[in-house]
Image (cartoon, rainbow, N blue to C red):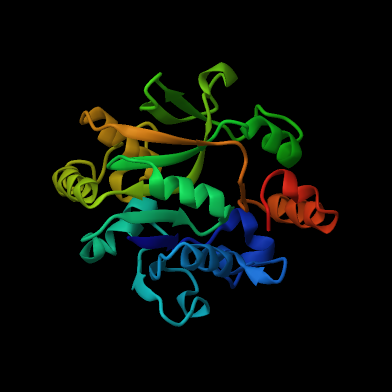
Length: 260
């Protein structure tokens, strides 16, 4: 099993801290976000790690890591970054966003959850959202999960709160077979959707989010499995996120959401 960290974007909503730095290189409690991810991967025997770089690529430089560059990071998004490493799709792969921290328990659960497409979801997200934003009806997206833990739909912005069965985390697992399905799907759809909306986000395919890719797989009839957790992660998406989590870490309140 390999891991891919998607770290090409600039993180414009964190610009106070990332004007000249990829957001995955933010320091948090003595280590960068990416360094913390690398530590967790290695602790569970995932030693083959790939990082997709883009903005300020030279700032991300860890020994023993394979690098690919998304030179068009400013005009593309996660799906395009993932495709930069398609030559690595010869094994099962864990994929993580570079602006999240996740627990060892969550990664362990993902490794052991069966399926070609597995998505980490937080069932207790409202508690985190209240600490993060002071409310739950902000910066939300839909997630509908059936009784067999198959995700039926996801990625619609600002849905009714009742339409959110869990929160998408930004940690996924694709099997070798699943990755072949993904490359086939994208090779087919890329020329069709270069200049028109692809999925729920309304983005063209080169600007597509990972949730768009998952929705495309669902529409193709693939089973996209939810792997359930109660907390166990945090995200650094805005200046306020970083400052709030730093403050919580000072008095150990952050342990409610993730053990560091």
